[in-house]
Length: 247
Image: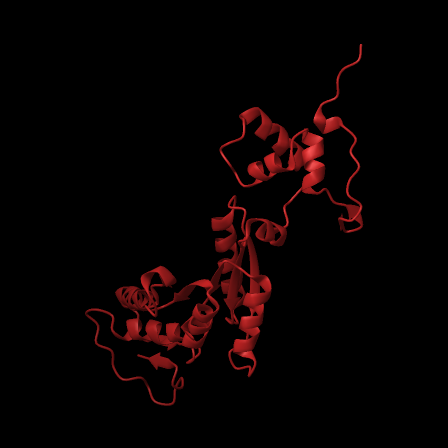
């Protein structure tokens, strides 16, 4: 008795022009042939269209999973005349901060069909703004997220507006319209840290600040110094330098 083969067990010639690590990579046309549907139907499943029967959707998703197919975000952008890339621009030297930012973005983008591209930069470089422009125009991302402290640079926001690229700024204070801002709680955090330390009964306290070029450094120290109900003595001269309070 012959058992009919399912689309998953069918043998299909994979497009030789697409390779990944020396191995032939399936294209959307291959997925369509394997699933026995049109390319348009595969595209609808990829873009989570509701106009596909559940049975057909499950069959296509099974083929996609078996072959490890992932649509090219730039090719999708050309087909839909829009971008499926979200960019992150940063100049923060703290690697853990950068990693946490990326993980948060990836978590929020999961299942959306968008991809993340990142661009480290140096605000002290004479080519800083041109580098950012090149990155934006080359990647054609639909949104840019500027992490502290590059988000505090008004030149970057102006550049992105000129290019016509949507953007979000992450900073310790309001710098833009609400739809362009994610504001942290640096001042409040500094205040709460000071209150907690004093509530524990400590008398000798040192405050070590971040770089003066980071607005968040000033916000945290400001919150620390202005903690409600606390009157701080003057910093001990010459003990810790201009970035440190010793009480």
